[in-house]
Length: 140
Image (cartoon, rainbow, N blue to C red; front, side, top):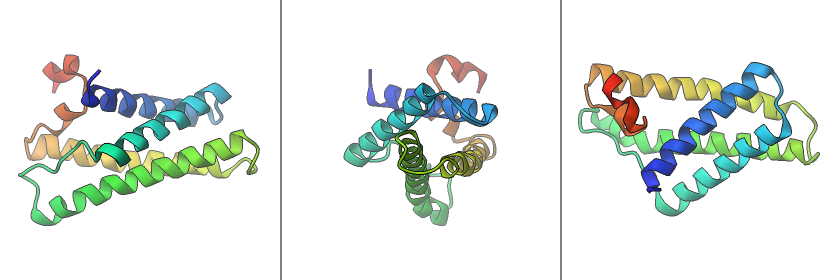
């Protein structure tokens, strides 16, 4: 499996796990552990190998400069969410903060998705092709 394939798998797995947890209001411990460990793996890869996405040339200079920092902020939010879920699962904190972190992450992820959808449709830079599996490219 290539680094890009693993990145795509982790990206969409975490999105689906987040949605499964938010939809149900609570989640089975195995879902929360899978979510948290997937995030830990994704952050470890990003910390050791760097970010995989690059800002496109059609973005303005200011957005291009902010692009890596926006993604680092998302990684930080992911890390906080995973840490809170692990702390709650192990009994280190009382229930509550992990749930709030999921809602915050859902909001940030929605903004992130809208930004890349805007790039793909308004700038025509094929931003969504970078993160979707190849079988879906014919629909983009």
